[in-house]
Image (cartoon, rainbow, N blue to C red; front, side, top):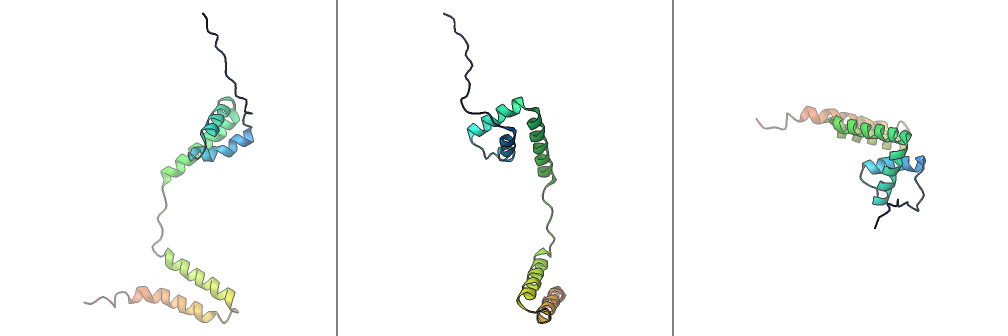
Length: 122
């Protein structure tokens, strides 16, 4: 008895390049279904243009991961609060009425570090 090898073909339509490229990022993040993963792999096996695009995206992701996160400046929180306060003062009041709030915020930004040494007992 001889067995004839039969190729099982999928009845689902193949991915277009546009559909495949929409799956690249979710695929790299592990956020695709098994069927999407299989369909994308099949498409990449036969489409050199998409394979190149996917490879470049994967390399970019690897480079960004290797670069690490930048260090946040120590005074970032203070700068953000000052900027938000200034913006809020300008949008709520006419230009000159907000001057006092902006002046107080600016003085507080300089006075807090300047007085830190005074509060520590000798």
